[in-house]
Length: 443
Image 1 (tube, helix red, strand yellow):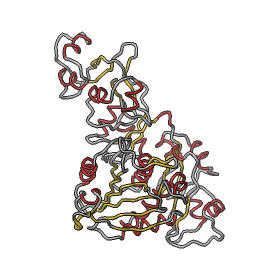
Image 2 (spheres, helix red, strand yellow):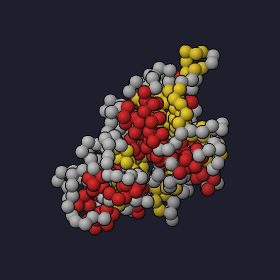
Image 3 (spheres, helix red, strand yellow):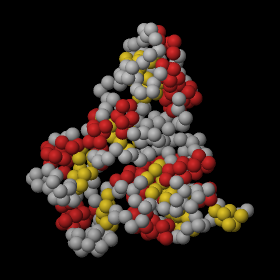
Image 4 (spheres, one colour):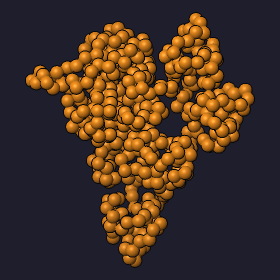
């Protein structure tokens, strides 16, 4: 694909941004950014996000991450998400001096369609040098096309605070729709559908396993007439995070799809209120996700399917099957579902972690990785020499192993275990504060 997307949740960590009316800017823009990130992924657009947790990023770190994601390229669109303050009302977009307002105006139209007020799209110049942009996200990001999206004023006396809290997913979808129009990408995902030539309410309802009446009620329609390009909201399950949305392709059967996702035919029939086993090409099916069997992992720099499978004691084939992958190619920050480990190889009684020797390992490299010594490993494993063999199990003496859960930060873990962030980073050879769900930490 020609275009690539970098999403930048503003602020974070030590910099909370603006706050008020129950809204903290750094938290809300992270929620918006994650929603946006998942939609772009579903659309097949190469996408990167600068932070997935409450990390502190300096301006230099932020711009470095942006430029490193896909290179300094005019076909890279940077979306920097923010919430405004100062008593105004409505959304606004600031675009770079090197770009025009086409992208901003397309997004503005979509934001207005959500019911949010829109103030303006504009550029801002540096007072000391009017040839330069005022904001570093514009000024220091090479030839990429960056925009700052301010979704509303959290201190507004009008409706902004309630809209920001209740409709942030709609606003994220609006930005994706605007970008999709700009890069000429068909948008058909999640909670909204853009009407195409030949569509009818009946055909759309059938494709999404709903009814014409439900579509009309949700979209306040008084007739069955549709227009090409019209945006329709699609009824979704209240616990949408418990489902994958699968599009039926030629040759599919309920049995084949059930086997692919590790569920039963009855699970799919129940989730979609199906009256028969007949399927149509292009039909959307909600596939239940068995939470107890999966954990969520975001791809990091240097990851491969093999290394991830090894990390979580599973196989490449299992990961590909669970995520409906057809190749081994991965993108940084790509979301993967990983089969939950039945055994972390950690003995709480013996207080050790079992490590499997791979090509290139030495006792010295293993000791260095886990902040211990060669002598300690020799003694703990009753080894008479430092020679190792591939697949050999080495016990790593530890005090405690912690498995990262959703919502964890290094700071919260350090507080819970009466230690410091620096100690945890040193113990685990971490170079940043980023964590992934299911990651093992030595405490």
